[in-house]
Image 1 (cartoon, helix red, strand yellow):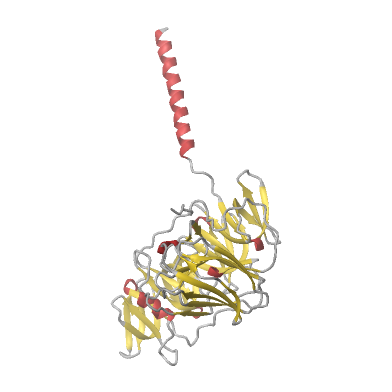
Image 2 (tube, helix red, strand yellow):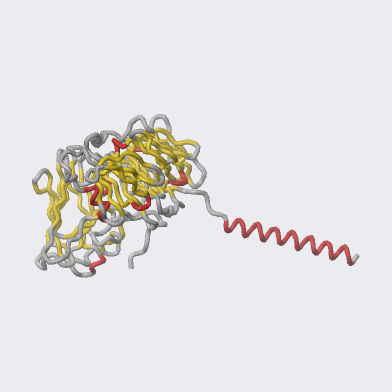
Length: 443
């Protein structure tokens, strides 16, 4: 009897231990992946993107488990949550395509006039050298040097455009014709030495390819297209072909015959361009004018203030916008396709009560809006400016009476609206809201 009681007690204890273990596992289990969609009217919706219909609508799965359809044109961006940035390993390169695409990976070999690259984001891809401006080498921290960036951005001093230029990590440049590339070395027929020269891939800071056979950047399409950002820093523009089996298929804007396949696990953000609303931070200015009076020069930044930190005006933080310093003018090509310009303007909280600026909006050189003097510490001012028919929009910030000291100005949530549109069925958040995991309370 006593033995049976002991066995029963032990059995009960085993069952209790198993239940506690199961409860702990359940409490520690990670929730199902949820994406966050930003719509043209500033509202958000938390759901999981399941696929796309033949007529271009996104199939969503709400947190309740119910299916839901949204028009892709209504969406501005999709944040794919739960993806941590992938650490960059020494020996990787970032390849810059003529249309602005950036593909990070490791060179495998050179096949004719193509580079075979192994990328975490898109697997093994073949990149024609005619579609590339060049590439930069990535150190362990994942940033390229200033000299390497200038090598790709600045126009070539070589008048004929027949020379490739290679920069090593000692800031030595080599001009000539690249003959071969492998995962170990690059061989260049050196123009001055008049002989082939082998350079280890790990010691290359940047490579600029000759202009003679380089294709021109393709014209931006008039219809919807995507910009896909991945964990390793890869970003590609293209047209959505489909979503299935955990992969997004995107037809390249630079090479229409090439389709990139992105695993969902490698994606962090999808921007929808040419939708009903276009954030100016998704565009590149056609013209930039920046000068300083007393303050050091602070170039404009997208989705950051000019000091490199988050956009905050008063007590409101903003996920999208442009940060500039006084005495700046950014001009964008609109081609007369938009109806209104919206923004929240003010002096960034980072400079406290310093700074006094005036904001101005010009359309084709004509004044459309001018603010009174805006001082540091004041709340944001929301503006809506009609821009119907405007082909070139200029955002100007001028210094106040205290010259340009502390004039850190924000064009927060600066966006262009095509026309009035219906709001999606989602719960609105504050205008400057970012996904919950990215929001921080402003002190």
